[in-house]
Image (cartoon, rainbow, N blue to C red):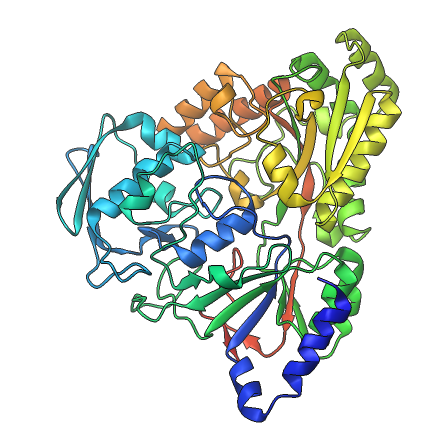
Length: 524
């Protein structure tokens, strides 16, 4: 969106009579990190799709402030037959956006679709025997072996979330993204007001039935205090910052690092950290194609990677806003360890990396780096990687594009000349890297893995052992082994942790922690 056009429409709004200004108070205007490219919350790991998913769909379990699962669409849940059977009972009065009742068969179909798509869901799918629906409100999940993390899995807030959708939609081909956004959540997606690259609109779902208790993250009473939520896509950080300062928008989710001081001094603007675990930046390789189908080639990259370079590029020199020395689990969480960390914390050397690349047998294959330009943090990560790859003397091609195009291209498995790719950077919420169960990039299931497609039977075996481990001490030992194996097989390279505050108008209250959540927020 052009800044001039945005301001002209805002000025028109401000010139309206007081009744129109009163109506505008019931609209929350939000600037996300990027446009919404895909509507299906079981199809892609993009956070914009995840955030859309939690607006449009409700979940059987929610996650509270302590990251624990709580019944959400459920009246109750029980575990029977030595953990082999879970009995879930839906609350009364739940309806979809089209007015149809939410039935147990809808929830069952939604779970079946999700386990075919999600990394955590696949672990449940591996032990799933059947899901039966003895009546309209009851679903019974029968397992081949106990899966004590079932409620945690259904409550997960990382992509891909298990939202409940009508069975007629959930039962569609899981290899194709759904396009019908009929959901069960507190907001309705307004398709006819969608402007690609500019605006996404939601309206309050008046028939949504919130729980009685207080809201915590994705659990509890999701009470909506705005009639409309408008996502305004502003690619230029200065434009976005100016819009927030001028009161033209209410919430700028991830301000650019070099604008934080200015925003912190601005009247009517509040900065606060809503995600204390921050985000973990990552470098992902296409392991189906040369040269990174060779693990020695991937390992050769370690000594060329300086995490602080990436963190300074994204968040500036202020060490309070980032951490380096980051491994395969989020810092300051139970599974984090120092196992194998010398690969990232030892002496850095481009020359050592060059020698390792030569020893790996690099034959000059093209390396295509995807470099999205419309998300400041991702653009900065790509710029540092480009500099590293050029210093290493690789046959580099940099493909500049927007974020939505990179999401589509990353699914292409071919060579760069066939429309594929070699490397991309992205960031994950730190909560998504706290354990092996929901850690999308810490998988080795080859063509069933997320784009990058690592093949590591040992990582898969250790992950399975972790899921069955009894007690945190046993889990920690297995997590250490997993990290050591990751340093050998290199499913990706961690690039550091950023702790970035969000920025919003000071008259907004009730904002919940964890992710962009649009219930519980009030104005004034």
